[in-house]
Length: 213
DNA sequence: CATAGGATTTGCT
DNA sequence: GCAAATCCTATGC
Image 1 (cartoon, rainbow, N blue to C red):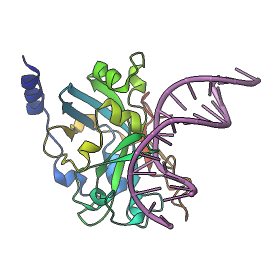
Image 2: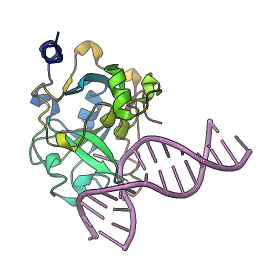
Image 3: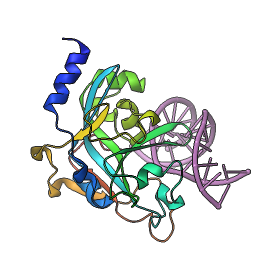
């Protein structure tokens, strides 16, 4: 079987989440994405992971959100229709992947912070340049997750409902039980005033070894 | 194991 | 010009 045929076959057995799944408040989407599967496909192959850690970022009122600057070239996807990717560069060298939430015109996105590799582990190790890393560390952190899955700013604005290049899937059996979900303050946003740094908008699965540290 | 410092580009003040 | 939704390595206990 050629790689093209393999990719086609796996797309046929996956079921990309529909637009409506994303058209909800950011905190709700952050919670619902736990347990979902993220898929990527490029010239190097197919890879997938189970999302185990997320963070919600709101609109201009959220002092920790990029959208606090309003609608700019960078934040445009956050104000766009739900179910698209928002990929940005942070600290001048790392790229991070968000999933756009809320209705069009209302900014909001969920940062994908960690995933458990499910498929394409060796490909992830190659992309990361860390051939000896344990599986559970390969996507344990937002920049690691994006790099392991081959996500860069080329995918900024990508439509996640199409089922190619980058998409998400969730079968009800994989949905996270409330008893295994924890929440706490978002990471790296200490600068945010007016209590926005303390809001418990980070969510993770307590029984996963792949959450960031 | 814990902590500290550096990397390196972009975007907003 | 400054600081950033991070990660890696080195050093010290």
